[in-house]
Image 1: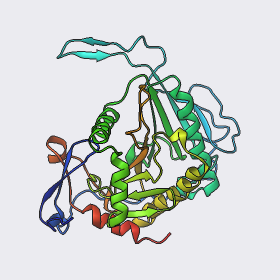
Image 2 (image 1 turned 60 degrees about the vertical axis):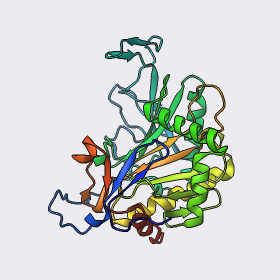
Image 3 (image 1 turned 90 degrees about the vertical axis):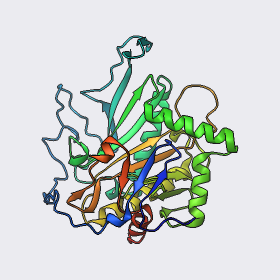
Image 4 (image 1 turned 30 degrees about the vertical axis):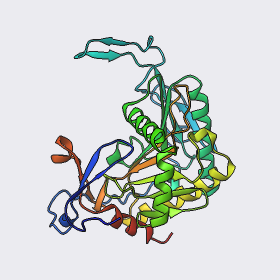
Length: 338
């Protein structure tokens, strides 16, 4: 497959149906925009003032136990409550609303205040993954969708430097998940195979957007990537939910996460900020053979540790746009030795 080199062109995201404008000829333009100093603060191994550390005092009076592995608790300031009524659509075509019921949880990855996910041992990362699986399995018995995600870094909205993620579960299927579900079902009905399975297979054959892979997983900069160093993680096994992973998938996923996230850190020699989220099949009944479990990682950094990608102007008003090509971004990440 040949592309028009540095000429502007658009690429379609088959998971959403949306397009992104690629303008590789702009990568040489001078930059006089926002630049920020790289924080050089020393982070404590244990911060007695941190409300996520073992023994920490949370805002509503709860005191964390002296946990030694992962620690999960209900968010003290949840976006969803488990007290709403039935989720029935109300209103008319112009003013439509729906009560939404759910729960929000926080997962501390380890008692260490100073260690991010790739800085943990493989065994400790496996424990995080198993915790994700257990939480999804438990909450899926009650809610239609369970979203597991992590916002790393202040510029991604993380409210506390202690490495942690979140789990939001609701009695509705979120808009982005609904769109991915519809696109994957449409592809399966047409081709008789799963969209992301076919996509990952073709990417593995070419390799120009591959970042790292092992026996069970691939990580690559997707053909349709919007963020400069965006990646997607796809299993080599046909699986639709995180809670269905076996031991070998967990072991290999820990390996991939450690290496991929470490590559990010080494790209600009900074603790790399990102939003990472896992997409499992929604719990709406019926067959989910069209769905492939996957994760999206959206990092904002563009040219250095201090220059970010902003989704403004044309991107906000019309269509996503990027300068650096996905192929070049993947090459830079793949070449980093961990």
